[in-house]
Image 1 (cartoon, rainbow, N blue to C red):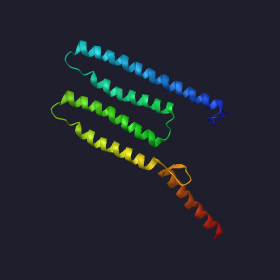
Image 2: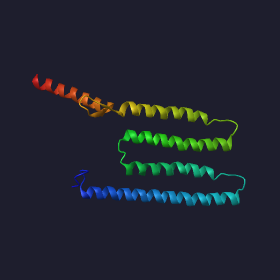
Image 3: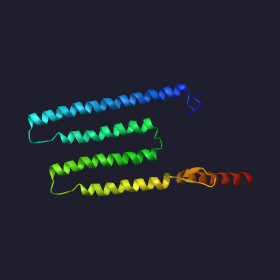
Image 4: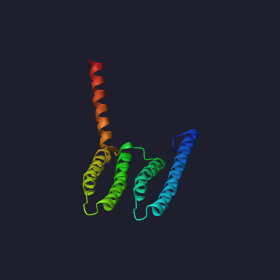
Length: 172
């Protein structure tokens, strides 16, 4: 057993193998993304000059590549709390989708900025998600000196209620 991490050598090997496989799949995805989009650009230039449609598959696929890469980075860095992952996914997907929508808006209706509406409404949701995450999961020091999040403190409080009920039931 590995003393510093509490994982056995076999567990560490399995985690390392998963990281290597995941990293390899991300590299393959990025390589295919680059090759296919170069080919789409060439097809676009030679067969439909003046009509630049290759941006649409490029940026829509970029969203998928960015999320795949982000998933690997979060896994490799050990970001396990799902709430934290949720905030990060929300922020990154907002950024890339809004980039794509701004490009679509510019190419299709550059005089009418309809993209402002999803940017404002989804942006508000992202900000609320971040605020809720900070309020609910940020850790505060207790009298004992330990840092616990609001969620952890609520769990402890609920456990104490359950213990109290159990004591009352056993004594009565």
